[in-house]
Length: 279
Ligand code: C2E
Ligand code: CA
Ligand code: CA
Ligand code: CA
Image (cartoon, rainbow, N blue to C red; front, top):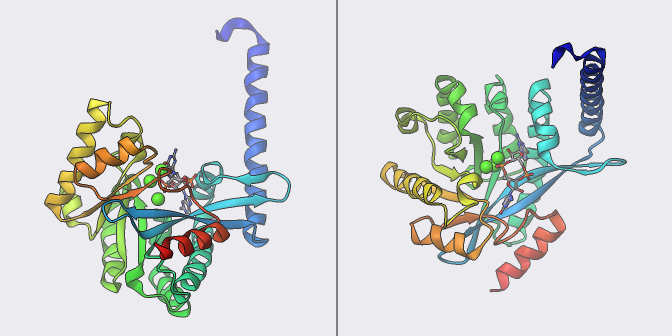
């Protein structure tokens, strides 16, 4: 309790100072990472489970720090969002991912579609569309091979503003997917009005399939919602054969998850594609 004396306060103070220190430290390090090119892109396959065929891949950023080692995005994306560094970070990831994707495409390895995660801050930038046109032009990538993923919550925070930019992207031929679907608070009215092509069922609903009755009901509902609204649907975080079968049997044929593959480095994805093209 609060009356216990100064030790308690001391403890909290120290913990807060430590956290503040950690944040400043990480922020400085991340700034440096952007400048010194410490961020790398991994790619996770997206599979058509019915045809057993690769249909695309999602680009996922990782940080290779010279001392701290390999760092996952959950550790630095939230900080990048708070500080606004996410705009620069996502553009860097986009450039790197597109450059590599283009190489696979040119080599005839049929990489399918490239899905890129975008923070909402990104699409709120005035020069965003211009940036996209420029980068796709110089990477000589077809717009129809590109898909942007935005989370449900981020879009719903400012749906009216999102609609306009998403419409421009959509007019260019870029597909839009709503990420982490089901965890936020989409209104069905907006789902109809937003120029979106696909919903990604969040991993939290997949995790306890098929035994969890609530998750099973939610998953089925999202799949039938997509079919009614004419949207594509993909399940993420599929780890087991049982989960894969449940999803497939209930009408969703697109799957991303460890069951098929973890996110792969450029080198491993190149091998994966070569293998995949043999069969
Ligand atoms: P997300 O967009 O929902 O990406 C899917 C996450 O689930 C990835 O984590 C992926 O490695 C993980 N995953 C995929 N399949 C499975 C599975 O079967 N089981 C389990 N347990 N996990 C699976 P990751 O790469 O750590 O990324 C975490 C989040 O960080 C992403 O979630 C995304 O929100 C964000 N993120 C990653 N890269 C970027 C980026 O370049 N830009 C932005 N703005 N956000 C990014
Ligand atoms: Ca995503
Ligand atoms: Ca997701
Ligand atoms: Ca997520």
